[in-house]
Picture (tube, one colour):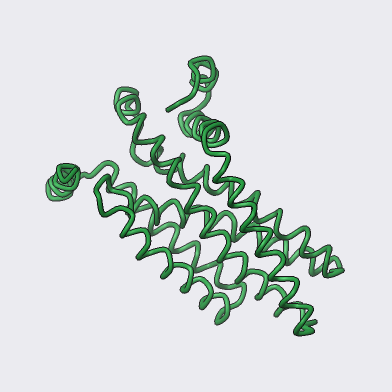
Length: 238
C-alpha cells in the first residue's frame, strides 16, 4: 500500500479492520483524488436531475419524492462508488504479501475494503440528501426520510459496489469486460427495485451486500480444494 511508514506505524496500533480501512482511505485521497471528484460530479448531476424531475412534474407527495430521489441516487452512487472501488482493491492486492505475513484473515480484508466504500457512500448520500431537501423546501418529516434513505443507500450500495468490483476484478485480462457486463445490470436492477418497492428496496440492497461479501470472503481465502485450484487457474491466466 502506497502510504508512508509513519502512518503505518500509527495505524498498526489500531485493530486490523480500522488500520486497513484508514490506510486504504489515505491512499485513495492521496493518489486517486480525480475519482473522488468524478463521484462528486456525478452526485451534483443526480441532484440536478432529482430537483428538475420533481419540480417540472409537480410531484408533491412525500413518498414519491423519496422514491425518485432514491432511484436517481442509486444510479449515481453505483457509478461513482464502482470507480472508487477499483483503486481500493488494487491497494489490497499490492499489500497481499504483507497481509499474509501479518496473518490477516480474509473476512477482515473484505470487511476493510467494504468499510471504505461504505464510508464514501455515506458521505455522498448525505451530500445528496441535504441540498435536495433544502431546494425542495422540505418539512422535518421529509428531511428525515430523504436523509435516512440517502444514508441507507450510501452504506448498502457501498458494500454492493465493493462486492461487484471484487467479483469482476480477478487479475485477468477479462476484468474490464466483466465489470462492463455487471455494472449496467446492477444499475438497471436498482432502479427497477426502487420503482417497484420504493424505500423497501434498501432491504434488497442489504441482502445483495451480504451475499456479495460472503462470496468475496470465500474467494479471498478459499477453503475447499476445488476453490483453491480455481483461484490458481485464474491467476495463471495472467
